[in-house]
Amino acid sequence: MNTRNRTSDVMDLLARIRANTPSAEEKALLETAINALLFITSTGRRYAFSDFLEYLESNAPPPVVASFKTREEAESWLHSHPEPPDSTLVLIAGQYHTVAYIRELNHRRLLPLTVIEFHLGRLKREGLPPAAASFNTRAEAEDWLMNQAEPPEQTFIQIAGDDYLAVCHRNVNHRALYPFAMALDEEAQGEDGA
Image 1: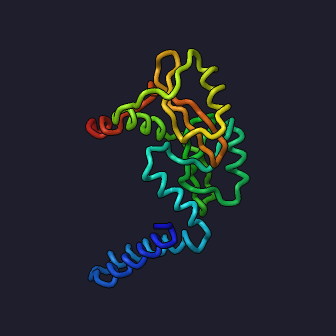
Image 2: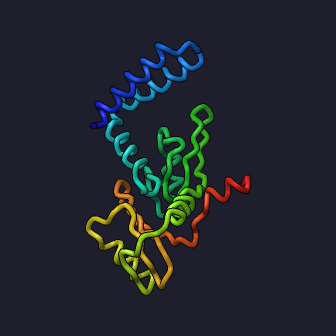
Image 3: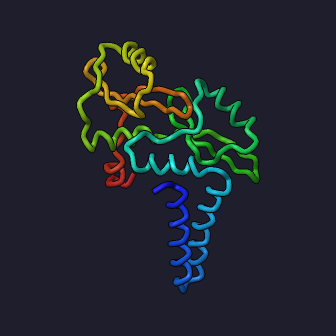
Protein backbone atom coordinates (compact mmCIF):
# COMPACT_ATOMS: atom_id res chain seq x y z
CA MET A 1 0.00 0.00 0.00
CA ASN A 2 1.44 3.37 -0.96
CA THR A 3 1.78 6.20 1.56
CA ARG A 4 -0.99 8.29 0.00
CA ASN A 5 -3.53 5.45 0.37
CA ARG A 6 -2.21 4.47 3.79
CA THR A 7 -2.45 8.05 5.09
CA SER A 8 -5.96 8.45 3.70
CA ASP A 9 -7.06 5.14 5.24
CA VAL A 10 -5.61 6.13 8.64
CA MET A 11 -7.37 9.50 8.51
CA ASP A 12 -10.68 7.77 7.68
CA LEU A 13 -10.17 5.31 10.57
CA LEU A 14 -9.37 8.12 13.00
CA ALA A 15 -12.44 10.08 11.85
CA ARG A 16 -14.69 7.03 12.42
CA ILE A 17 -13.20 6.49 15.89
CA ARG A 18 -13.61 10.20 16.67
CA ALA A 19 -17.28 10.09 15.60
CA ASN A 20 -17.93 7.24 18.07
CA THR A 21 -15.91 8.64 20.97
CA PRO A 22 -17.99 10.24 23.74
CA SER A 23 -15.06 11.97 25.46
CA ALA A 24 -14.43 15.55 24.30
CA GLU A 25 -10.78 15.25 25.35
CA GLU A 26 -10.28 12.07 23.30
CA LYS A 27 -12.06 13.67 20.32
CA ALA A 28 -9.62 16.59 20.51
CA LEU A 29 -6.65 14.17 20.61
CA LEU A 30 -7.97 12.29 17.58
CA GLU A 31 -8.50 15.60 15.77
CA THR A 32 -4.84 16.47 16.46
CA ALA A 33 -3.74 13.13 14.98
CA ILE A 34 -5.86 13.74 11.86
CA ASN A 35 -4.46 17.25 11.52
CA ALA A 36 -0.90 15.93 11.86
CA LEU A 37 -1.51 13.68 8.86
CA LEU A 38 -3.09 16.58 6.98
CA PHE A 39 -0.01 18.66 7.75
CA ILE A 40 2.26 15.96 6.33
CA THR A 41 0.29 15.73 3.09
CA SER A 42 -0.43 19.45 2.63
CA THR A 43 3.20 20.52 3.18
CA GLY A 44 4.65 18.11 0.65
CA ARG A 45 6.23 15.83 3.26
CA ARG A 46 4.50 12.64 2.09
CA TYR A 47 7.68 11.06 0.72
CA ALA A 48 9.66 12.03 3.82
CA PHE A 49 6.91 10.45 5.92
CA SER A 50 7.07 7.31 3.78
CA ASP A 51 10.85 7.17 4.30
CA PHE A 52 10.30 7.56 8.05
CA LEU A 53 7.79 4.69 8.09
CA GLU A 54 10.36 2.53 6.29
CA TYR A 55 12.94 3.49 8.92
CA LEU A 56 10.56 2.48 11.73
CA GLU A 57 10.09 -0.95 10.15
CA SER A 58 13.83 -1.43 9.64
CA ASN A 59 16.76 -2.02 11.94
CA ALA A 60 18.51 1.07 10.56
CA PRO A 61 20.24 3.72 12.65
CA PRO A 62 18.15 6.80 13.51
CA PRO A 63 17.78 9.22 10.58
CA VAL A 64 19.40 12.66 10.59
CA VAL A 65 18.61 15.89 8.72
CA ALA A 66 22.16 17.24 8.49
CA SER A 67 25.79 16.33 9.11
CA PHE A 68 28.61 18.66 10.12
CA LYS A 69 32.34 18.14 10.51
CA THR A 70 32.67 20.56 13.44
CA ARG A 71 30.58 22.05 16.23
CA GLU A 72 31.29 25.53 14.83
CA GLU A 73 29.86 24.53 11.44
CA ALA A 74 26.74 23.12 13.14
CA GLU A 75 26.30 26.24 15.30
CA SER A 76 26.59 28.46 12.23
CA TRP A 77 23.88 26.43 10.46
CA LEU A 78 21.66 26.53 13.55
CA HIS A 79 21.91 30.29 14.03
CA SER A 80 21.51 31.17 10.35
CA HIS A 81 18.52 28.84 9.83
CA PRO A 82 15.28 30.86 9.65
CA GLU A 83 13.38 28.18 11.59
CA PRO A 84 15.51 25.24 12.76
CA PRO A 85 13.83 21.82 12.64
CA ASP A 86 13.06 21.36 16.36
CA SER A 87 13.71 17.93 17.89
CA THR A 88 15.35 16.51 14.77
CA LEU A 89 18.69 14.75 14.82
CA VAL A 90 21.94 16.01 13.30
CA LEU A 91 25.47 14.62 13.30
CA ILE A 92 28.44 16.63 14.53
CA ALA A 93 31.74 14.86 13.86
CA GLY A 94 29.77 11.62 13.58
CA GLN A 95 28.04 12.06 16.96
CA TYR A 96 24.28 12.43 17.28
CA HIS A 97 22.78 15.68 18.57
CA THR A 98 19.20 16.92 18.79
CA VAL A 99 18.09 20.37 17.72
CA ALA A 100 16.33 22.35 20.44
CA TYR A 101 14.42 25.36 19.15
CA ILE A 102 11.85 27.48 20.98
CA ARG A 103 10.36 29.82 18.40
CA GLU A 104 8.83 32.29 20.87
CA LEU A 105 12.21 32.91 22.55
CA ASN A 106 14.37 32.30 19.47
CA HIS A 107 16.24 29.84 21.71
CA ARG A 108 18.49 27.49 19.73
CA ARG A 109 20.74 24.71 21.03
CA LEU A 110 22.39 21.52 19.90
CA LEU A 111 22.30 18.85 22.59
CA PRO A 112 24.31 15.61 22.52
CA LEU A 113 22.14 12.50 22.39
CA THR A 114 23.12 8.87 23.06
CA VAL A 115 20.77 7.52 20.40
CA ILE A 116 23.43 5.59 18.44
CA GLU A 117 24.69 4.02 21.67
CA PHE A 118 21.20 2.65 22.38
CA HIS A 119 20.83 1.54 18.74
CA LEU A 120 24.08 -0.41 19.07
CA GLY A 121 22.88 -1.86 22.37
CA ARG A 122 19.64 -3.08 20.81
CA LEU A 123 21.49 -4.67 17.89
CA LYS A 124 23.92 -6.33 20.29
CA ARG A 125 21.07 -7.64 22.45
CA GLU A 126 19.36 -9.09 19.35
CA GLY A 127 22.59 -10.84 18.32
CA LEU A 128 25.07 -9.68 15.73
CA PRO A 129 25.28 -11.45 12.38
CA PRO A 130 28.66 -12.52 11.00
CA ALA A 131 30.82 -9.60 9.89
CA ALA A 132 30.47 -8.66 6.22
CA ALA A 133 34.13 -7.66 6.13
CA SER A 134 37.17 -7.72 8.38
CA PHE A 135 40.05 -5.24 8.59
CA ASN A 136 43.34 -4.96 10.46
CA THR A 137 43.07 -1.20 11.00
CA ARG A 138 40.40 1.48 11.24
CA ALA A 139 42.03 3.31 8.32
CA GLU A 140 41.52 0.23 6.10
CA ALA A 141 37.86 0.02 7.19
CA GLU A 142 37.27 3.73 6.57
CA ASP A 143 38.84 3.46 3.12
CA TRP A 144 36.60 0.49 2.32
CA LEU A 145 33.47 2.32 3.57
CA MET A 146 34.23 5.54 1.69
CA ASN A 147 34.83 3.64 -1.56
CA GLN A 148 31.59 1.63 -1.51
CA ALA A 149 29.49 2.73 -4.50
CA GLU A 150 26.18 2.09 -2.75
CA PRO A 151 26.70 0.88 0.82
CA PRO A 152 23.73 -0.40 2.81
CA GLU A 153 22.36 1.77 5.64
CA GLN A 154 24.31 -0.36 8.06
CA THR A 155 26.80 -3.20 7.83
CA PHE A 156 28.47 -5.27 10.53
CA ILE A 157 32.25 -5.36 10.23
CA GLN A 158 35.27 -6.18 12.37
CA ILE A 159 38.39 -4.12 12.93
CA ALA A 160 41.28 -5.89 14.67
CA GLY A 161 38.77 -8.44 16.04
CA ASP A 162 36.39 -5.81 17.47
CA ASP A 163 32.80 -5.45 16.24
CA TYR A 164 31.78 -2.23 14.46
CA LEU A 165 28.73 -0.90 12.70
CA ALA A 166 29.42 0.80 9.37
CA VAL A 167 26.65 3.34 8.74
CA CYS A 168 25.65 5.28 5.63
CA HIS A 169 23.24 8.22 5.87
CA ARG A 170 22.53 8.72 2.16
CA ASN A 171 20.34 11.79 2.60
CA VAL A 172 23.24 13.78 4.12
CA ASN A 173 26.07 11.93 2.33
CA HIS A 174 27.69 10.81 5.58
CA ARG A 175 29.41 7.52 6.39
CA ALA A 176 30.65 6.52 9.84
CA LEU A 177 32.05 3.63 11.87
CA TYR A 178 30.70 3.02 15.37
CA PRO A 179 32.36 0.50 17.70
CA PHE A 180 29.99 -1.82 19.55
CA ALA A 181 32.12 -1.11 22.63
CA MET A 182 30.10 2.13 22.98
CA ALA A 183 26.77 0.26 23.08
CA LEU A 184 24.33 1.04 25.88
CA ASP A 185 21.55 -1.32 26.96
CA GLU A 186 18.26 0.57 27.24
CA GLU A 187 16.53 -2.38 28.90
CA ALA A 188 19.18 -2.60 31.62
CA GLN A 189 18.94 1.17 32.23
CA GLY A 190 15.16 0.89 32.55
CA GLU A 191 15.47 -1.91 35.09
CA ASP A 192 17.87 0.16 37.21
CA GLY A 193 15.50 3.10 37.11
CA ALA A 194 18.22 5.27 35.59
